[in-house]
Length: 175
Image (cartoon, rainbow, N blue to C red; front, side):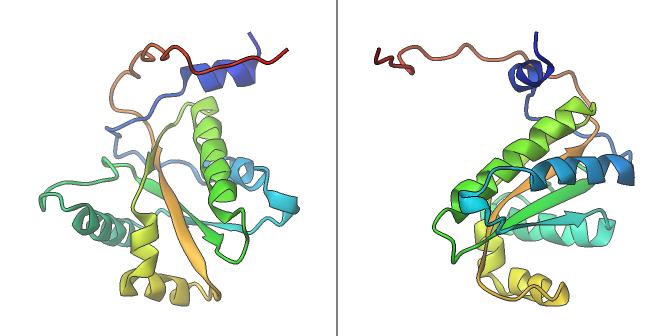
């Protein structure tokens, strides 16, 4: 089977990560794959914020937890040691789709390298908050940006689950 199709069929979201750090080389490879995602008119209006600093990672996790309304001991990043945050330029009509494609590429690249990943939501709310605006300011990112999502990244601390059965009646052919 083609390796790309195999990765698409085998990749699963990971919700329990080992604390082991991911190598900078692997993180950069995953990021590069994300940067090669298709974008409307090839504008490339998506940025990736790679967070491996444990203190900042935990602050972002706490902000995400509060937005989600979970108990204080819950980590919405499931212990992942790295988080890749995808933000997109809101001035582009395709920003949401472009950012989504980036996250898809990140997760497939991670899987191909033996890493686990999980798309974590609430980035939109994070970057609408003072916390997120301050983070963008610290990074000298100007303009109108929307948080698309987080890619929790690390080594899985459990076996990957089996794929659920695909629902019927989702494809229609016109010949």
